[in-house]
Length: 191
Image (cartoon, rainbow, N blue to C red):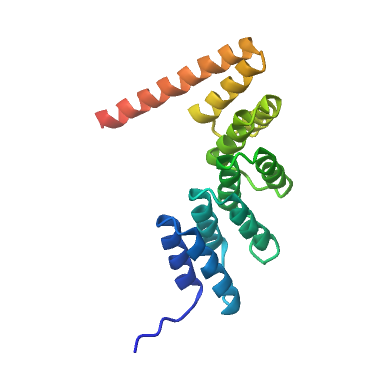
């Protein structure tokens, strides 16, 4: 008779499998089961469960997990914020994405490029161009690496808000980023 001991490692592995298999409902069941089993989940399990929700456009469920995290002993992390912000962006919930972006700054959680891309894209796609440009400005000042995704969203927001000069400046930055990536890739190929 094989009995699997329910511990943090088991839950982390199961949550990770749910994320990879896009089984958001199973991830939520496991999260509930961990509470009943008195197993403390960690940031990795929560992030995997939130990513499973994000991958399936279940932003409300991702935010439920985020809320559960804030009420537990688990500290907020760049990955959890990234998953929650991205879930909101994919669902067109720009206000929630901005709230999470702001909360991450309050908690001094340094966001990654992925989260920054998502919040600016959420605003730009929702027609909140001024907000997209304001957040883009914050991202640039924070020294988070900018990529062609966030630059494209900023170009779109600039163009749609009538700031054509800014759009052209940002477009030239995109070209610089692309050329830098091409140069780095060619160096890698030479080695």
